[in-house]
Image (tube, rainbow over all chains, first blue to last red; front, side, top):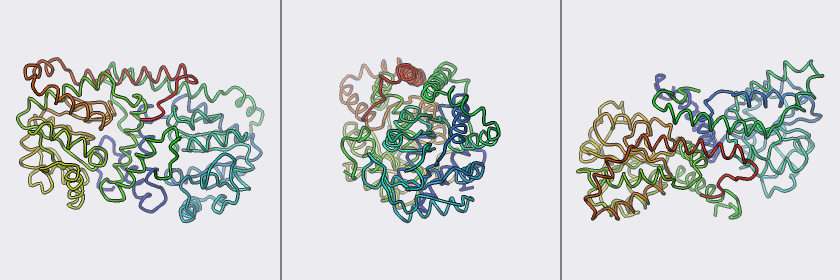
Length: 261
Length: 261
């Protein structure tokens, strides 16, 4: 595909890059979204391109939080729509209380429609945020628009690939913020109550499995929530990355970095 | 600029992103170039966004290698032209033997002209590779084109932000390969004889200063070259990154990641 030989050691990564470039040409994502994707690639490369225990634990806790929430919302931007529309739709169908809201950093009406179309094709029935009418406190201009039936009234928000200012504003407004971010040093990961340091698709698949397995075990939710320290998991992510780089520095010629994602 | 508030903790980084996005819209860089820029950002973030001793040592050794070379060539792609045309021009004027060659992974005649125009405006007099006629062994299709008066006959090549396959092909052809790459795990950094793990602009400025200071100290060149182990410096870069992540994991709330580049 895209003229990339399947034998290339970074085949899946190259394929995804070509896909993201196409999504930008279609107008679904902005150029800055491609740069953000590159940052994510780098951090995932260091993590080892698989879900580590600190992430698996955060994903299970995210499921418990979403199940406990009165009004949980998942925020979807261009990169999220390009990378994981199907996974968003699957999660929304496993958890009918979860609202799906389009939330763009670089908002234009056309892009909001494109993101909504993509979600609709993936199977999301109700989509908020296409014509937002209210603004979140503490965010200037376009960046603060939210849906009055969605993020504005949410008690728990799942914000994958979110900008730092917005993650902070959401946390300051008293909502429980679950972020998905491959960079454990990002302002988003530091501001979130529960940062999931994992690749988006892998994360959503696991949050969904946990929602399904925990659904009928209501008694487990509070215990999981109480025994999870999101910022401690973030520190574990940093420690893991440090260890992995140290191992690679030592064995350099033997141990290879990941060959495929 | 670009509507970004100067008070933003990542102001310079955001400014550069907006510049790179514009360069893509002009056709100078390709969408994949933006993704690569993002990867670089992430690694530089972990390094601490300044030149570390392992990089400074590699930059000085690069200058010695370029001074010793019979036919040194610097390879320039779209990202290099967008990020550091001026620094390329300065280096070429400090070292008249250095040839400047346009070398594109995603080659079109129009992009080759754009890169050459950018270099010319920055002050580069002679530009090779705009109409290449020969191919480098071991590289398929468009990716192998080189200039018969440039890379084909070079003994030392400085390849900033190079693709792994091409760095390998250059090394296999017996040339001394100096790479500039922020990712110490990349195939390029592993294939190069002398990988410089530093941000491009910082690296070229320092290579240039070393060229100027070493120019008249011919007796020092061979000693510097002999006492520099490029792959050992790459391992030091990995070890530094591991240490920095470890420190950040420990002190997390105190020590802040870099606020500006």
